[in-house]
Amino acid sequence: MASIGTTFTRYGKKALLCGSGELGKEVAIELERFGVQVVALDKYEGAPAMQVANSFHVIPMLDGKALREVIEQEKPDYIIPEIEAIATDELVALEKEGFNVIPTANAARLTMNREGIRRLAAEQLGLPTSRYAFAETREEFDKAVREIGIPCVVKPVMSSSGHGQSVIRSEEDIDKAWHISQEGGRAGSGKVIVEGFVDFDYEITLLTVRHCAGTTFLKPIGHHQVDGDYRESWQPQDMSSSAIAKAEHIAGAITEALGGYGIFGVELFVKGEDVIFSEVSPRPHDTGMVTMISQDLSEFALHARAVLGLPVPEVRFYGPSASKAIVVEGDTREYEFCNLEKVLEEPGVNMRIFGKPEIKGHRRLGVLLATAPTVEEALAKVERAYAKLSVKVY
Image (cartoon, rainbow, N blue to C red; front, side, top):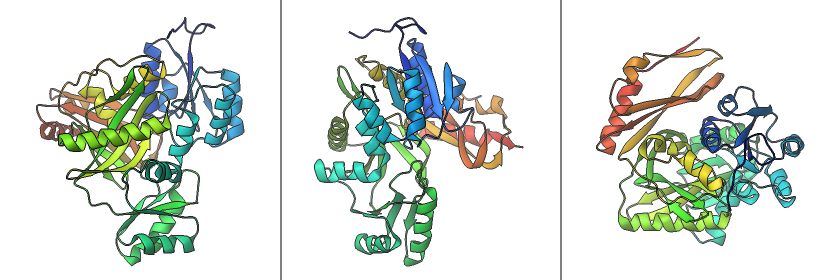
């Protein structure tokens, strides 16, 4: 029987977010709507989820000792990884001691490392993937590129949001790709995956919710990326019934193997009727921010329900929708969103500002959302809103 007691008492529930970015902020809000006490954790103060959490801690997220100290102090009912770069081996040990890691500590460990999840998908589950090879040294890297062939994609095995990712289109790109991969990994330099270039018509995120009443697949989300980092997404992506069935089969297989309750962002390539597995995140996905306007229960609300052991009897889809990330370049702790009265003047347009405390290089600071009779019109709406937006960097 699921139950939640009074907040800040022994009967209440406490969730600890490992990572406090914009996705974690929305999860915190949804958990607090159920009366759950939220503790936010990240490597810097002022992270978005910290601004809405009941309390927070600042620690190096890859420091297993520091992570253990906080968890033993807080004694949370739920440990919810929101980012990949966490001391996952420590989470595995803590889970064995009785702590509840969402969806499971093994899922967090496997998906932090592209090698683990790729071997699970391709070698254990037999799911269709691109050709791939792993390399730990420059010599192994050069060999892997020769084996996979050009063009190919290079990614650190531990990274996200396009960090350290590049495409080799000619031999002149090989040296640059190696250096990018070694500088952009979440845990520093190290092993990379070299993937065969997939000729696809489009790529999707299939948000998959494992909850106490079963597994629910949301409508497929199409998206556009720049260097592996999300820029726009839309829902639904037009797909044949056959391709949707294949996508749901792959998503069901990989999420069942990972286990636990929660939402998973399963990334897939689609070519005609063929569907190829790419990656999976055992948490809300950035492309899924479109669900904040496209349906009654966003991916964050669904994650909260699943985490708390509650069912998802129905997800009401409102209609074609789109999102566009607000990405800003600079090096500052002071910036300002301007012309908002024009940005939001069109019906069916909404906006979220994440509240990130600083910009270093390029950073995603918010998202524009829109609904319309068609996906194309929704995308056009967010483009118009984006064109009206001005961000002053001081």
